[in-house]
Length: 478
Image (cartoon, rainbow, N blue to C red):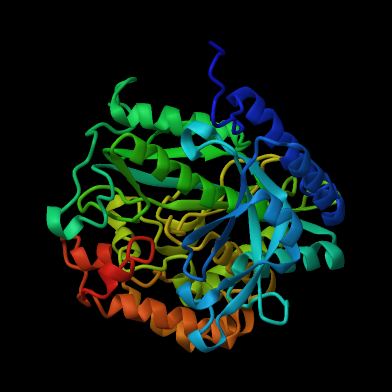
């Protein structure tokens, strides 16, 4: 009797080979032309018979991650004619003008671990185009990419970013959606930095997620529990700003997927549990020109150049009005609590972790600025775009050398943040009036579904109507 032939032979690549493929693609992403990258990966997709689909990824204005699987053959034949219903995406087009285009970013290819994502697929990111195939204004990946391209072309400057993204691991699958029913979250571990045992579920989750990320070319540097019980942080290396934002979205997806496979939930709510430290997404920035870090200056104050100090000054000056772009939920203002290392002070310091900007110890290669007030549920593309444009184009902070500076604070509730965001002419300049109004309206709609005062207890409304949690069913039950 002949041996049985497997019905499915979809691609499954060992982790060491995955890492090699993804690191090679990462290196090529910004050294090849877009045309050369398209040819290279078109040829690859055509030759690789065990690939069945390409997952195209994009992000809406609030930061939700969306994925569409395209049959490989169809994608190769129709890559210039990919449309989707933009009215089904919150924050995109209206029902009367729904069709939008997807433009494949071929160089963003990522080979996926089959035990986490399934076999026979690769992922690529896509930029959203309007009906006339111009960049869609509410797609901040496209906005950021265009700004970075112009910065490189006009000034020879490249922006680099790394993100330190904290999250919590909770009991049960989809624990956020069931928050009202369960009355709260149940932590999987009471350990923090020093008290999580090697094979407890938090450590198993961290090990599994880190292995997947390394295979995806993240170049992880350290992966560990964080200060709060059941909190984690997996750190990956500095890279080009666009790639860094792509990796943030994939990091959160991998975390959620690995947790779900373990019967758990990985949440990036900034403050899901009262009485312990919240989660942040510290953004480390530097700028380079002709291969040199232009934020560094030997003998400069704290090792930074005048350009870096001007960048800091502009962000501090506009901090309150841009706050909503990187603290975008009701829950994120609960995190800005000074009792838990909250970076809510509008100041810069090499030491004080209550400052919204910190200057880590660095050298010619590593000198950078750390923005500590960014929440992990923010749209990473919008946050980087806003901080970058503010640091380069904003008005510098006016200082009176004869008077002691009064410490200012970021807004401590979303209502004040929305008010200052809406009143800001600078926000109109960098985001555009339409995006400003659209984004503020979604933030207001979520705020209106929660009590105005945060109080001491995490409310179910700030969880259920959170932009990364809510869906049509939950929203329409209000």
